[in-house]
Amino acid sequence: MIWTQIELPSLHLLWKRKNREEIVSSAIRTNYPKPSLCYIPAIVQQTGVEVKAVDMKIQCQDVITPYREFSYGEGTMLASRMGMPFEMLEQKIRESDVIGISINPSSWSNMALDLIKFSKKIKPSVKVIIGGNEAIFRPEHYLIPGGADIAVMGEGETIIPDLVMALRGKKELKKVNGLAYRQEKNITLTNPADRSKMDDVPLPALDALVEDIPLWTTPIESWPLPQGAKKPIGWIFLSRGCYQSCDYCTSPKKMGRFRFKTLESIAKELEHNKKHGITTLNIWDDSIGSVLQPSALGRERGREYLIGIARMLKDNGFAYELSQGGIVIKDLWDTEKDEPDFELITEFFSNEVKNGKFVGFYGQYFPFECLQLENPHDRYTKLMTFEKEKEVLKAVISCGKIKPAISYSTIMGTLDDTSRGFALATRRLLELNGFVHSKKKRWKGNCLLPINFPNGILLGDMILFGHSISCYLSRTFPSITKLEGFPDSSPASII
Ligand code: B12
Ligand code: SF4
Image (cartoon, rainbow, N blue to C red):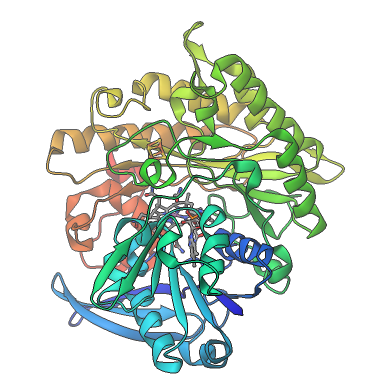
C-alpha cells in the first residue's frame, strides 16, 4: 500500500475593482514546516505502509492557478491556488492507494474539495482521507458532497493504526474509533477515539522531507532572524490542549484535555532536530502555560518544568520563538507577589550570543485580544487588566541581551464593539507600540500593530473603520496603502 500525504497549496486572493489597483488580500506563507506533513507520515510509517509527503506550498511557489471568483464589496475576489499545480500530482495519485489531506484553516476548504475531486477523477479507486480542524468540525462537507471517503475526527496517533488495518481488510471500518465515513449517501460516525499520550507522539518524519528542510526559512513572528540564529527553522509541540475556553477558538474542543511531553521526550526531539541541521524552532503550542494549572502540574512544579524546557533549549544551542501565543499572559503573573513572575520570564524569554550563535528566545506573538474594553479580563479569563499586561510585556522585552521581536493583536469588529472601544484599543495599541519600539538594544525586529477581524468584515469596511488598521494592513498588504483615501499609517497621524 502507498499513502501519499499532501499539504495543500497556498491560498492567493486577489481583490479586483474597476479602475483600481488589484490587491493581494490573503496572508501567504510558503517556506515553513507543516507539522501534519511530518507527523502523519511518521505514524503511517510505523504501520509498515510506504508513505510519501508532498508540500504543494513549497514547490512551484510562483505558479498561480485561478479556481474561483466571487463578488466582494465593490468588486470581485479571484481565488487562486499558489504552488504546485494539481496536474503535477497526477503520477503520484495513480501510484497511490491513499491520498491523505490535512485541512486546518477553513479558508483552504475549496482547494481541498477540488483536490478530492481531482484525485477521484485521476484514480476513482484511490481512498481520500482527510484530517485536521475542518475534518473534525464539519466532516459532512467533505464527505457529501465533497467526495472524500473518510474523515479522521481526532488524532492520527490513536486512529491511523486501526484505520490502516481496516484499509488492509483486517478490521471492519465501523470498528475503527474516531472516524466519519461515507456509505453511499449517508455518513457513519464511529465511537470517539482516545487522545494520545504526548510521549507516544512519534518523532516527526524529517527523513521524508530532507529536500524541503533547507527551504524552511520563514520566521513566523520576526523578520529577519536575529544575527547568529540559523536557518532552517523547524518547530516543536510540547503539549496539546488548553485549559482556557475563549469563545472564538476551536483549539480546546479540537485538542481536548491538556497533555504535555516529559522533559526526556523533549530532549529526544531536540536531538532529532539537531541531527537534521535544525537549531531554530517555532514553539507552536496553543498554551504550554497550562502546565501551571492545578489540574496539570500546579504552579510550583509547572514553573520548574517550564524553566527546565528553557534551560534545555539553551543548553542545546537552540533559538526559539513562540508564534502561537504559547503562554497565556496571565500565567506570567505572580499572584502572590502581585507582579510579573520575573524568574520564570527571565528563564524562558532571555537570550544571548554564545560563540557567535544566537541562543534563546527571539520572538513572540502576544494575543491581547480585547483592548477595547476597560478591563479585558471581563471578557476572557486568560487576560488581565491592561496595566498588568503591560508589566508582563515590559518584563519579557527587557530580560534578554538582544531585544526580541514582539507582535500583538486585538480582535475587533463584533456587534458589541463601539467607536469608543475602538478609540481605546487604538490608544492602547499605540502605547504598546511606543514602548516596544523605544527600548535600546533592539535589533531590527518587527513590532506589528495588527487588528484581527472576525469573518464577514470586508477589507473595504476595515479601511473605513479607522487609522489603526492601516498600520496593520500596510505591513501585511503593502499594496493596500495605494488605495484612494487610505489613511497615513504613521503613528503620529493616528494620535
Ligand atoms: C501551527 C499552526 C499554524 C502554523 C503552521 C500551519 C500549518 N499549515 O501547519 C502557522 C503559524 C504557519 C499558522 C498559520 C495560520 N493559521 Co494556524 N494554527 C496552528 C495550530 C497552533 C496547530 C496546527 C498544527 O499544525 N497542529 C499539529 C498537527 C499535527 O495537528 P493537527 O493538525 O491537529 O493534526 C492532528 C489530527 O487533526 C490528525 N490529522 C490532521 N490531518 C490529518 C490528515 C490525515 C490524512 C489523517 C489521517 C489525520 C490527520 O492527526 C494529527 C496528529 O494527531 C492550530 C491550532 C491547533 N491547535 O490546531 C492553528 C490554526 C489551525 N490556525 C488557524 C489560522 C486561522 C491560521 C491562519 C489563517 C492565521 C492567519 N490569518 O494568518 C494562518 C494560515 C496558514 C498560512 N499558510 O498562512 C486556525 C484555523 C481556524 C479555522 N477554522 O480557520 C487554528 C485552528 C487556530 C485557532 N484556534 O483559531 N498556523
Ligand atoms: S488561550 Fe489561546 S488556545 Fe486557549 S482557548 Fe484561548 S485562544 Fe484558544
